[in-house]
Amino acid sequence: IYETTTEMINLKMPLNKGKIKFLWHLKLAAKVRNLKKKYKITHTISFMAEADLANILSKKSDKTVVSVRNKWSTYTPKGLRHYKNRWVFHKADKIVSLSQMVGYDLIKFYGVDRENIVTIYNPCYKENIKQNILNGVISEEERKVFEKYKGKIVITAGRLEPQKGQWHLIRAFSEVVKKYSDAKLIILGRGNEKDYLKELIK
Image (tube, rainbow, N blue to C red):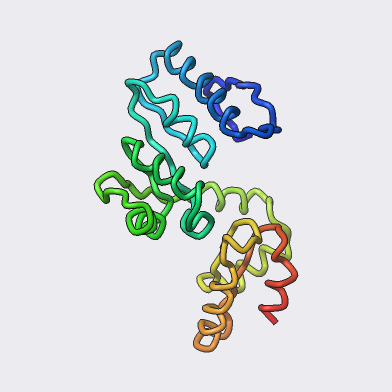
C-alpha cells in the first residue's frame, strides 16, 4: 500500500471471486456506489481493470475517469474481455493513458474518441533520487559506477516480465554501445524474465 494522507476504506471483498465472477463484480460495484452516495462524490478515478469496471458499473451522476496502464489489445485481442474493456472505455467520461502508445491502442482497437483521452506519464522525482544518493542509500560500488559513467547511463525500472519488453531496450542498446562504448544500461526489477534477459545481454 502506498503512503497516503487520505482515508483508506476496506471494502472487504473476498479474494476468491467464486464460480460466477460477474456477481462478485456487481457486489463490488454496489459497495462503491454506496460510498459515492454517502460521500457525495462528484468525480471518481480508478486504476486497473477490476476497479475500472466497478467505477463504471457504479456510475450515477459522478464524472468517471479510468486510468489505462497497459496496451490492452495485447492481452485481450478478442473475446469477452475485449468487449468488456471496450464497454468500460466508451462509458467513461475521460480516460488517462499512461503513454501516447497506450492512447493510440485505445483509439485503434477500441474505437475510443481521441478527445476523451489524456496522456499523463508516470512521474520521476529526480531531486528525491539525487538526495537519496547523497544520503548514502546506494552502496559505494554503485556510487562509483554512477560517477564514472555520469551522463552515459540509461536506467529502466519495472517488473522483469514479458509485458515490460526489456528485451527491446537491450537489443536497441546493443546498437548504442557500438557508437558509445562506455554507455551503460541499468535494469532495475525482479521477475520471471531475469535469466532470459541476462542471456540476451551476453
